[in-house]
Amino acid sequence: MVNEMFYDYAKIYIKGGDGGNGMVAFRREKYIAEGGPYGGDGGKGGSVTFIADEGLRTLVDFRYKRHFKAERGGNGKSKNMHGMDGRDLAVRVPVGTVIKLAETHEVIADLVKQGQTFVAARGGRGGRGNSRFVSSVNRAPDIAENGDPGEEKWLELELMLLADAGLIGYPNVGKSTIISHVSAAKPKIADYHFTTIDPNLGVVRLEEGKSFMLVDIPGLVEGASEGVGLGHRFLRHVERTRILLHVLDVAGSEGRDPLQDFAVINAELANYNPVLKTRPQLIVANKMDLSGAKEQLARVKDKLGSDYEIFPVSAVTGQGLKELTYRVSQLLDKIPATPLQVRGEGLRIIKVEPKEPFCVTFEEECWVVTGPEIDRLLIKTDLANESAVKRLSLILRKIGVEKALKDKGAHNGDTVRVGPLEFELMV
Image (tube, rainbow, N blue to C red):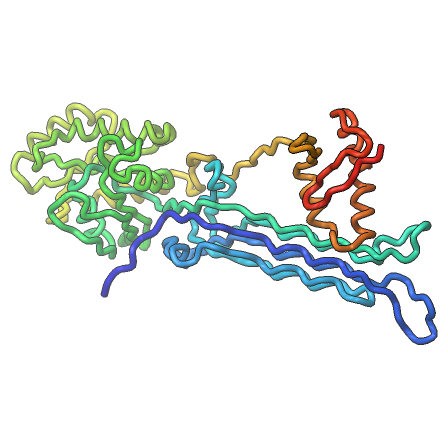
């Protein structure tokens, strides 16, 4: 049986449903000669909501589907009947998923609990029917609004595994062998670098009924904090762990110095996220079954023994692993199980700078009015309805477009373009 690949990154597009259009209708019943306006409002568009689900382990589903759109609101109906609201779209993601805006990489949500939800794209508001436009001077309005468009955006999803303890260290120091020995995890193991290219999760069960989650984080190398060797992808998972188990090859089986390895990996952790410098760390002195290990272990103890607990082990024979797992369990009892701070600090409020509602420019013998408020008004206006266009012109005057044109130097008879509309200025 082929194992499904582990996916911890995805880029997707989401869109809330557009609001339904309001309706123009009039009451037409027997014995009622001139019925009033009878058009209902459009329904609200559905929203796109993310839900954290413990049953999911990877982001593999987003490899095959990358566009998610909620349902559009229904149009208003006669007899003042409201259009149906669009159904919300629930998108399930693994617990530990960080959601970012793809354009700016700003963190907007960090889903760390089962069932936690986040509304990422809200549906548009429904347009008003002509019943809403009755006034003392217009008893039979023949205009209605179009619905607002739903929010849309590109997002990055990053899965940061939630584990109690994480195995870190250079490639080929024995991390995968350790996790396979102390848990039911079955990682691919071979005698060459980067055998493990995906994190492996395993539950370590102890005799007295206690257990903890252990993650084998693929081998880090110098420059990992800058992205070398898929470093960013691997380091992402270190941030969630409460204890780090730093595995060293004390036999120096590949000619490396375990003390130098220890210094390099810790420098990469600190460079990636300074918070990791304060994370509790145990040293796992592996490969004690090989020649030369005892001499190297003495060097490690002499240099690091006063600052770190050191556990001599052999991942192959199982020597020392029981003592290591029990000590990890003891330490976890003293460390709060609440999610630790990661880069992005969980949910971040993004400051949106206010934009000018419109701007006026002169292009090719014509005055052009553009801007976010202009776009919104055009979307909501039925441009095929003469009464609706007249109402739009009144709104433009009310928000200051006419004054802005005059201030820019526009004169009577000049051509003004607003979206697809062109008209002569009369001031």
